[in-house]
Image 1 (cartoon, rainbow, N blue to C red):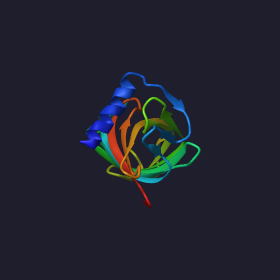
Image 2 (image 1 turned 180 degrees about the horizontal axis):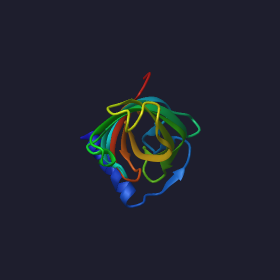
Image 3 (image 1 turned 90 degrees about the vertical axis):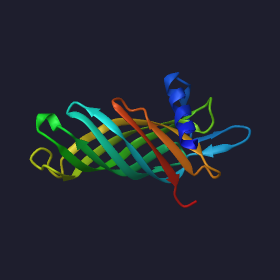
Image 4 (image 1 turned 90 degrees about the horizontal axis):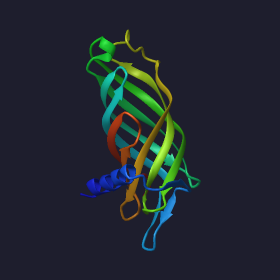
Length: 178
């Protein structure tokens, strides 16, 4: 129920344009102080709608949020294209690097906000090297964003919902070293 509530809250803020302003990765209210800093392991699942076709994907990785609102990370993603640009099925395993990230805290709702970053992914395994060879850049400096909700007694749980164009995805992360 916590996951649904957190995702619902994030979706409502996205749909109605709640004020998200650049700030440090820290928000507080009179009862609780949420801090998005440190290292988080995460998983994400969804579908990306690309010019080459819809591609369900899963992702696991880690991200590091610093005390100044910066964020970076690495992930491994699997994509499956039922018909890759009219050439039949294709699955890919890519390594993604997230960089240049910024945490934007929602001033109107403690413990929520958005993370914006750039992603670059390189193919490490493929079902058809003729269509997408190993070592190919799958995407480079692609703008990405996710809304987040922090929860847990020690702010150790982060729920995500993608706000990137043409992507429907949800996930969650856990703070490492609690």
